[in-house]
Image (cartoon, rainbow, N blue to C red; front, side, top):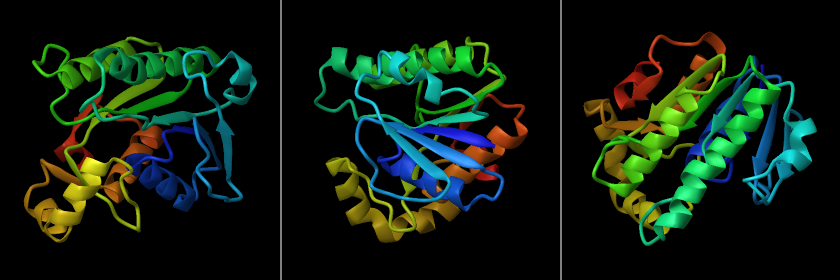
Length: 217
């Protein structure tokens, strides 16, 4: 299986990349991001691309893939509504529309978050919900929306978001316990990455996966 990964520098993306490189069924990984990830592996290639609204310059590099793991995301806290929508919705759909044209047999896996709802009251929830709906309408072989709750970072992985980093620093020792007690609300970078690989390889009957679904996979 050949995989494209967006957002490899973030906490979720780091975890997904790790699981991909550990998986013998993953032949190669292409990381596409706006900054370098600073990691080398014989099965990893990366492209630094600045314009996430226009992928025409790198289309030739985006063809021939079986799966895309889209882990790019930002916190809406303190961010202007227009910028948050551009990053969350516009970037995602621009990438997805390019990929489905180049790889109609691809499986697309998108990481949104627990509480996502296109009719929700919270801005981030609505925008992510609209993004999910737009992705599900595209003619991919398969499209899966992942809605993790709290994510325990394992294997030395850390969040780049200062607020999340502080939360993990304070609650870190309790999170593994909560994960075993509350599988509907807590997962880990390891579980998330493995679950994404599972649907990419074998598909699934559920297209929108909540936290408990992720942990079951």
